[in-house]
Length: 388
Image 1 (cartoon, rainbow, N blue to C red):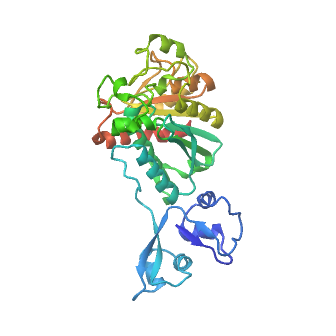
Image 2: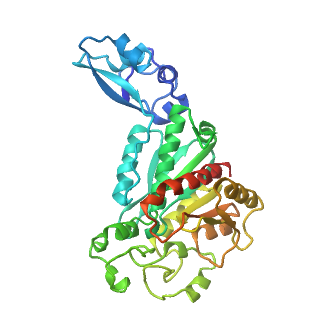
């Protein structure tokens, strides 16, 4: 919601008027300095939308009483007389509908919705996919400590993108409404942590799984790579047939030697050399740029998570793993016979906690009917990860 400033107004006053933390107002209006606002400038009020009420038979005071808002909140929105009153309406319910096949367009639409209503979040392109789709990072918070979460490294695990976007929406609701998420006050996290999200690492592959051959735009013979099968439900790779979670220089040579097939395929092909794919490169460069304190990569399926790599993990990773196990019921696994994953490389390079979380149980892609249960379990891990 936008308002137009009046003589003597301040962000501090707007914070009191709308019961929105001042830090959120400041971050939603980064070009506005502290102190008395210039007159007649637009100011973003996050977490609100503008409703309408007829002027007939009502006064601002009566409408304010019904809306449980100060009269001046309505006066601020109604400086110019119109046929209807503009009324600030607090957003108290999730804005996103995530129980649908969650393709790249769904992500774009939802990022637009959240950016519009919560303008204190930052959305930035970190690179492009093989087919030129922007890879987006979302950042929330002010802290120097950066915790990173990602989803859809594997195409047919697109439900992980929906989980991350639902959590982002719930977190934004919590900080704007001074309410708890998983029993935890979220504002201290906003002030002390920066949360980094890349909700969809492999948008080309996700669209291929959901939309079929047309998603390849005629640029790759995906039917041939898929052994003649026009159904792509088992496709994990990017659009070039490279498994993005087998692309990292953490004993990549071992995976290259033992993995089959030896050519582009729906899954497991690690590429001709490490970081050959633009999506993998974007994620590597992001970790180096942001200097993450910890990483959580969402995958499916198994109701377990992996938290070690070749002894490079720090000692306190074990404590975090115990907390994840206790709060979610997921099984903690320290080592698996696997290399070249994003989590593996992160632990090896930074010697910091990294986790691969295998959400849910079943056959990928997991059905949408599993989403409520998956979210109920995984949101506890996502919140606990903020303590890293």
